[in-house]
Image (cartoon, rainbow, N blue to C red; front, side, top):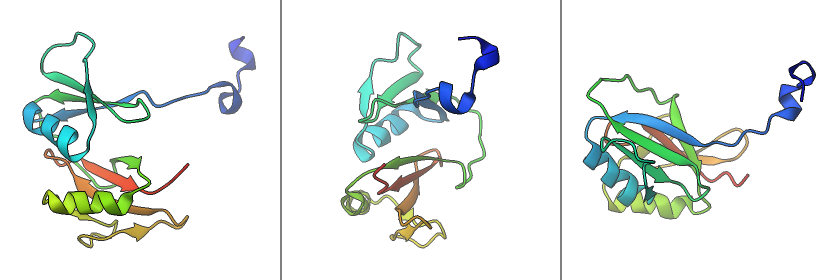
Length: 137
């Protein structure tokens, strides 16, 4: 394929591979992503021990990297994932004393986006925002 004939809107087929975040305590974050989020830990490709990899059910990966650098976190910058059992996940968060809120910041409840998708937000141990919604693409 010649680069002169490339149409970015039709010729490139992208799939999400992974997100990488920096965490202050690798073990605490690993436990959160395993036990609260239910992600499967996978081999880290031979990288050093301060990097651990996790995988979502669609094979997208999350790489957590221990680093003491402070990073500013904003709710508008977040990882978003979906589930078809959002209310069960909300109960799971409640049972594990994990604070969650809707977009406006009301604790323990959802809100609906303009397209009708329900969503909640919560933070991991390092303050990264995570959205979980019921969007069934």
